Amino acid sequence: MSDKLKNLVVRTVSGIGLTVVVLGGMLWSQWSLGAVLLLLLVGGMWEFYNLSAKQAIHPQRFLGLLAGVLLFALNFAFVSNDIEVLGAASRLFAGGLAMLLLLVPLMFICELYRKQPNPAANIGATLMGVCYVALPLSLTLYLPIIGSEAWNPWVLIAYICIVWSNDVFAYLVGMAIGRRRLFERLSPKKSWEGFFGGLAGAVVAGVVVAHLMHHDYITWGVLAVVVAVTAVFGDLAESMFKRAADVKDSGALIPGHGGVLDRFDALLLSAPFVFVYMLFVF
Image (cartoon, rainbow, N blue to C red):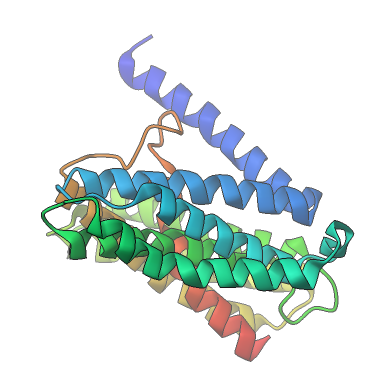
């Protein structure tokens, strides 16, 4: 078996496995969804901090991860249907929020004792890991409940399908007829033809979703446009970080696909925009 064919097999098998885990976690329950997103959060933040370290920046990994996990846990507690089973939920929520607020000044205090040459960059990278990875994944928790009386995982799955449709169609069209470079400085292979192919694929997926879920076509069509545009910037943003770190992939967690950031970069930047759009339109 040639190396190219072997890589294709590994990529396909790991891709199928990733899809099963992600979609299965979303469908099973809120808790399984939370578990999947939390794993992505920890993996994504760790990869981001590794990229920062390759640029001679030294983020406070422990405090950053703690802040990201705590932010996610607080949002999960807010949206969960049965978090009350834990008891004293309101007091736990207040305590967690207070701890999250104190973590930021604590980063400044800790930096005083680290004796690093660039403390501002270290603190900035620590906070950026929270904003870049933990915040969008926390907002993703709200998508299944916006505009619905009960938790509806199919809304989130529909959003993921639109993201993937955009990615697949952008790749296929770009490979077939891509000529005009979209952003050659950061991603030489991306083309305007691929961008519009991805946009068309996303809109088609949005219309199909609207039909299957008996929702408004225009609402989901516009959402697909929002996804397609912001997803491209998500991909470019991750390429920017990888180029600065002089690496090909953000990690090696997913065989044949790279790391968490490589696979979910589009979601990380599009999720906040989708959250705001759904909040006002759905």
